[in-house]
Image (cartoon, rainbow, N blue to C red; front, side):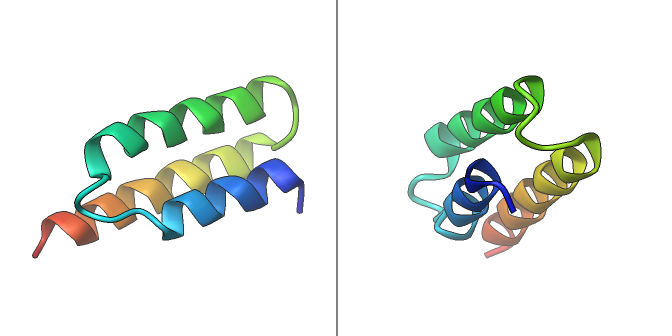
Length: 62
């Protein structure tokens, strides 16, 4: 696993409802940056976006 992927996954897991709006945009930007520069492939790109979406949805259910 590339350090960029590890960092993004940690950011997603540390996401809280209080920090949802500003941090979600930052994480999306980080994912796009990592994909654009070849740190992650398309499969991981889609997986990270789905993980972010799932985390956001779970936080908003409460």
